[in-house]
Length: 121
Image (cartoon, rainbow, N blue to C red; front, side, top):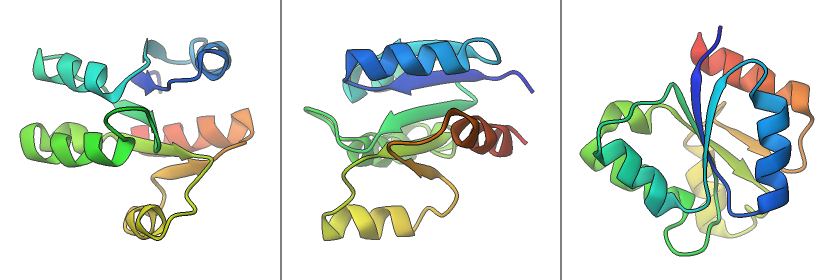
């Protein structure tokens, strides 16, 4: 199922790789900062999946999720996290509350696509 995916990732090379993997099967938008993602949702855009890094400069993925729960709960339900550094107790506890909604970096393309397909139903 083709979906609309917003990728929130601060690393340019990873954004580029994610676009190559996702664009053939989904409509993909990219932003570098969680604040940009929030602005797009607040302006009325809606996404089937919001794929965000857990740790970002400025607003973190966890903070983005909390803000989306407050202002656009249906979009909070669309969030899927990528994490390469979920070593802090708070990050581990946060992800433990969201089973099936995160993937650990580095991940295989097929694993990510499979997770997104599950989320798209």
